[in-house]
Length: 114
Length: 114
Image (cartoon, rainbow over the protein chains, first blue to last red):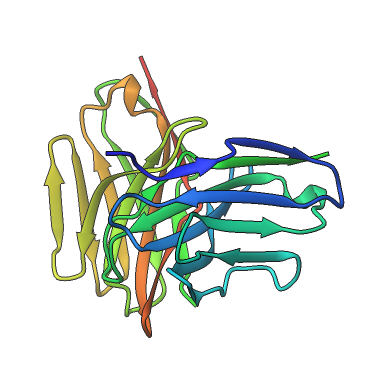
């Protein structure tokens, strides 16, 4: 019974390149959340998606960041033209429904921008 | 929006002593309050949670208390052990239309000294 799977676990990009982070939720979960964690800081909400829908993107920067959760395949967090300030751990979490309850986190993708 | 304050940011205790971490929240519509433990380089994992219709919940050495009137909740760890050393995050969940978002505190680095 696989948990939330994220890849890549580590990603190095140069300034101006694109980063794509993937997340497959737990089996049976159709709700996906992305959080960003800067070194020695807390988890900041970015976006909440259901299959083919963005439910809440109030935490997403207005430019360069986008997220999707297609009908088939993993959820993808895309960062265009990365800058050094994008270096962080990006965690994906999933849940089975909209009701308040446990979020199951993946192991995170650690992005380093050179 | 929801704001969650967490204190202290660091906490050191002797093995066998108790540890208490406190959080306050701003939105009275918050109805779910989980606590997550994150070991270095690992994913956050739920250790205990409480809903707004309950004042206290206990699971072995871990307990959480909720004061809805004062809008604060606390994590209590008794008989601490070295393996309890980690970063602990509180969170509060508010319903927003059809969406639910967990807002996290900034974390408490707990060190249990042997």
